[in-house]
Image (cartoon, rainbow, N blue to C red; front, side, top):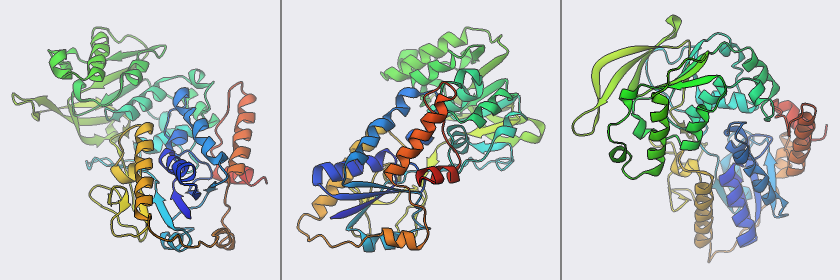
Length: 432
């Protein structure tokens, strides 16, 4: 039996691992990028070393001779899903949710309004990233809209100096941009209150540990009763304690991060350097409602961090409302021998461990469905890719890229330096 896994992020690699080790199945793991690991490589901030090191563990899956990496192959363009169905006994879609959500407010399409998904791609060295170097030299105040870990990551990277990130694997062009950045104030803006923010305490506390940067927030935004507001949630309780300490401090540093809770963005008037927000409050029933008032937050640049969403593939069912591939127990509805796991199955939620559990469950469903069936023979697809002149990067190619990045890092006294050019990645991967 031979299975195609579409997406080489954690969900896809966990699915491949389970297929190969539990069921001894041949697996081809496809990815549109020349390199594996998905958001572990291109979604985790470069100064979060422990999470980024997860990819070393994920890489071990490809040591199994039953598992092949087929990088730089774009499903829906280089290969169609229908062609995969002709060459594989089953397909597992694990390609995640890479698009950003929109606010739908005036000014959102201004050149100085950008998605956090795009900004994260830029500072992690994604091959398809847009260059935002000029944006950082045109803004003193930046508004980051969102109250999750991605918003906190973005605020932290904007606030750190290039010297503080020098020992990470961040691309050199990002360090150069940060060294010339004119950003002095980062405003984290959200329509909800502190008790409803989704960032975790570790990420939150890191904001207060940046040298030369003060963190500020309005004490009036904090709930009167922390115990009641946290409702037994330890993360919320710890977050409130951290923010309570900050609320008692005066922001006197040259650079600062300021939280603006209960602020719903209404208009981005970026030509005049302001984000206009409607102020919100909690009513007697505990509901979030507008106060009827508004305020302006200084911002020449706005970064929207309000979530990810998935996109469909030709011939594969897709729910436009939920932005996921519809499924039951991981089996794609209306498409035989096709399965789904990870964010494209359940939406952008959970941690890396959640994806492992999800992938294993979908693979188990695959084998329950096929328990009493005869596996079909599957023709090699490599010839088709070669005929279409697709530069396929295998795992040996990734090892060459890995070695080159470590070599580049060694010249700057760091573990590695991320190579961001797609063509360079392809050339190195192919040994050119």
